[in-house]
Image 1 (spheres, helix red, strand yellow):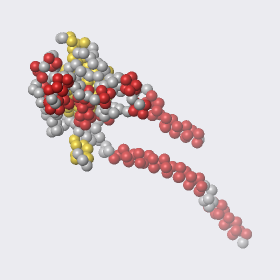
Image 2 (cartoon, one colour):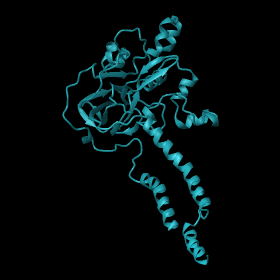
Image 3 (tube, helix red, strand yellow):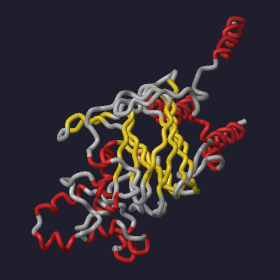
Image 4 (tube, one colour):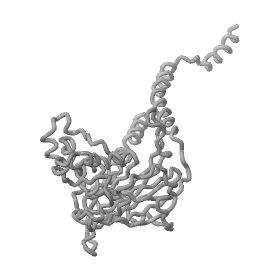
Length: 345
């Protein structure tokens, strides 16, 4: 009997390990078809519920301080970066054929939060070579959001296969990420910034062993999991525990929004897609479904507390019952002795 109970408990304990061994796709592959983002589409209210942003190699606010250099230094630089004080780069040769509009990369994203995103939309964005294209949304914690992205290349008027990197980031993640992009496209990058763009072999060769595995660039995707690299199709689902609001002693209350990032440059992560040398077309569909039951965050802590308390108390209860076995008086024997004594008298 006890052996069957022990075998049953072992099966329950190891079941999660076997269930995760099969059927779970690695990060970077689509988990379902693009049809998962179906539904009745709503018109897009640009800059109200969704906004468009970009980073391009011919405009770089990181080189803003170059305007204060002398003429000799300016003559020596002449890198990819452009000063943020310059006018629209439409006349620049590097901007010819680029699909991005100046407002996408010249203006910093507004600190005013967008309206809660609780509808279904579909849009297509074009991302230039060696650039970043991003969609900013304010995801709702009362809805489950599914984001579908299809990647293709554009050569002339023909669509061709292509790959890119797709990331989901918060505002803080996106600021660190774009800072890395601007440093790597700056005309005045020092050794550490150049190290950021080195290959994995160069990174290991030029770094000491204790620093070789350290991701010093400082940016990551949302929850460090929504990173889909070298792919042409992505489906991701997001269910927030609550609004992404953080309070700090130094920065006060910070409200985080979300950026759906299409990456066509060779960033600092190992294994990302290389530069495609073509314009990338990304079909983005976002659908939302209202959640029927939303448990508060403290229920997770309570469940784990009950679980671990049960583990601690179970041996104590079993030991108490074991030690108390056989110490209880046998009432049946006492009831049998009483009549025999009365008969003897």
